[in-house]
Image (cartoon, rainbow, N blue to C red; front, side):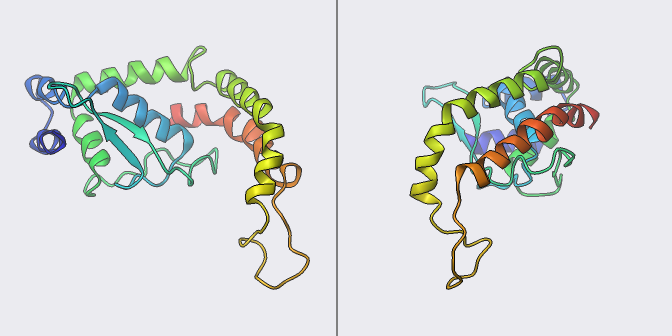
Length: 196
């Protein structure tokens, strides 16, 4: 199970045999895509509580990682991509640090990074801005109802008791953030990730 995956990483993954063994427990391509996604969005919280690792309980199925709870993502286009403490206790950090010691993994990581970050890949500015625009078009009307439901009070900008209260709205809050990501974050982020 998951303990065996972590034990394999802790034992070291430099050798081809160790790398082959860890693949019994870990979907390497999924893990690389998971790490690239975290790097791309600039998620600074790589703690044990901000991801899930799942697997089919059928014997031999590897773990696959999923992003979760990423409210610290998409903040700064120029943010660093690796908030990793190789001596930390986080399982993702331990796995990634151990895998980076293996030459085959580094080559596979580079191949997947090129696939996603270059020449029309999913994380290129053209692809990310097109998807973001499409998502924004689909959500624009629904955000009005969502702001009516959840945006009735702004604790982050106004202490209780002050009147009139500033409310979250689509045009004054959501649209501004949507445009910031479309015009600033997404066009710059790919180059930042590639640069690091």
